[in-house]
Image (tube, rainbow, N blue to C red; front, side, top):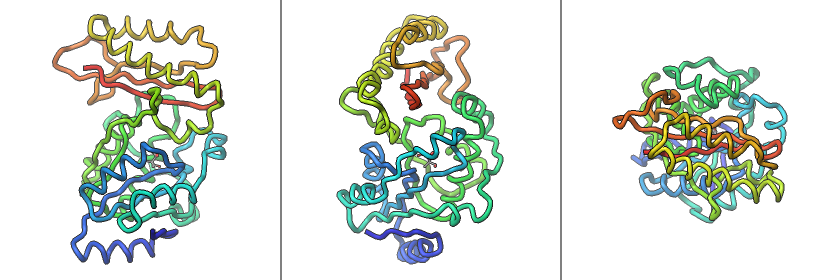
Length: 283
Ligand code: PAF
């Protein structure tokens, strides 16, 4: 498998592939790959001759320094996992921070029609400026035909679709379903940092989302939200940061339900010092 550590060499390879009419898929990641990432790569391989997987822990999207320092970095294992899918059709791009940011590790400022102010945007200062900066740079480098993102970060997915629309980028963004462990926990690179006790407790998050979905059939968003808050109130291991039922398109919290609109419930929970997010379509 070919691994490129800088953009110039990657560009040469991709230009040659594009000249030969190959379609390029792209899966941006921060590494510590799991089955969720691999499902994105497999989706990409269905439609493209080559899938580029970037592995880059992007410093500008972390609002918490400790989270950045402790973020798992497992390049050798990541490459092995990708090799188990395909030797020839996957290209790994693992650039250095200098290659991406040169001497200025700073994000650009973005607006995404207000999507950036909700949920993760409200709770993680500057997060979506960091995500917008890195994804736009990576799109500029890779120039993919298709790019694949998981719905676990549903807000991020909507923001990237908006980035593409507002900046007239030619890539097509494909959202892929959340990949879950057998007990329902959404796959995340951060799961590896959970203690045994927190890992055992964590499926409670998805169980609660499923119950919230059921309740939303007959109850108001306010009632369902109060019920969820109550479930976490006395939980010994999980601390609720937010539970929000929002309009799928605008991501604004729902005030009054309408049968014409589509809604999703979003949740962020602390398991010790590990922050987990998840979401579920409600209708
Ligand atoms: O979802 C992620 O892993 C990151 O936010 C992304 C899209 C790779 C940008 O760093």
